[in-house]
Length: 116
Length: 112
Image 1 (cartoon, each protein chain N blue to C red):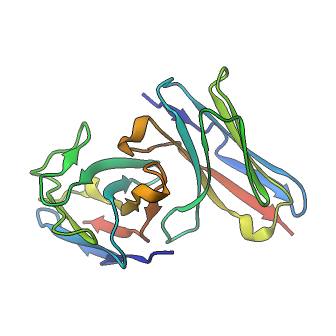
Image 2: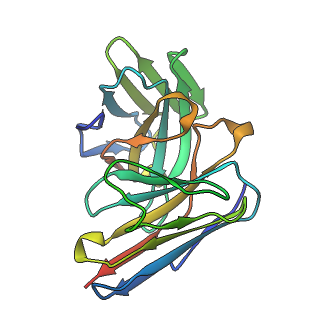
C-alpha cells in the first residue's frame, strides 16, 4: 500500500502568521483532499486539490484563508493563512485512486496545529 | 446540520465479545458508506465499506450492515480484541465526487 506523509507533524504558531503543510504520496494518485479535525469534532472536508488548477472549496472555506496547490500527481500543500486560535486543529490530507474506487480515501498521519 | 451521526460517544466491551458500533444518516443521496479506525496521533485507517446496493459486507472480523429504509448502518467486530481499542468513524459519500461526510466518532475500548 502507498505511503502518505505530511510535514510538519505538528507546529505551534503565533496568531497572524501562516503555515504551509505538505502532503507527499509515494505513488501517483487520482484525487487529493484536505480535511480539518477541530478539537473534539469530526473530520470536515476543506477542499479537493485539483492538479494544475484551482482547488474546489467546500462551503465555509475560502481560498484566501486556505490556499492549496497540487503541482503533480503525488504532492499537495495546504496553507493556513493569518492564523487565529480557532485554526488550532489537526489537518489531514487524504488520497484516492480511481482503480480502487473514488469513494475510498486513505489518510496521511495529520498535522497538529496549535495557534497561540 | 449533522448528516451523519454516531450517537454513542463511547463503547466498552470485553475481549472476545462482539462490538457493535452504530451510525445514522439523513441524506438519502448517500450511496456509499465507510468505516475508519483512528488511533491517537495517527490518521484514520480505512476499515471496510459498503455500497448502497448491498445490505451486508464482510471482511474477516469486521462486518458492516446497511439498512437503507432506516438510514442506519452498523459495524460488527467479532471477536473484539484489545488492539481494536480506537476511535471509529463512519463516513458517507454521495455520487463519485469523493467527498466524505463523517460522523463524530465512537471511542471503543476493549478490555482484556
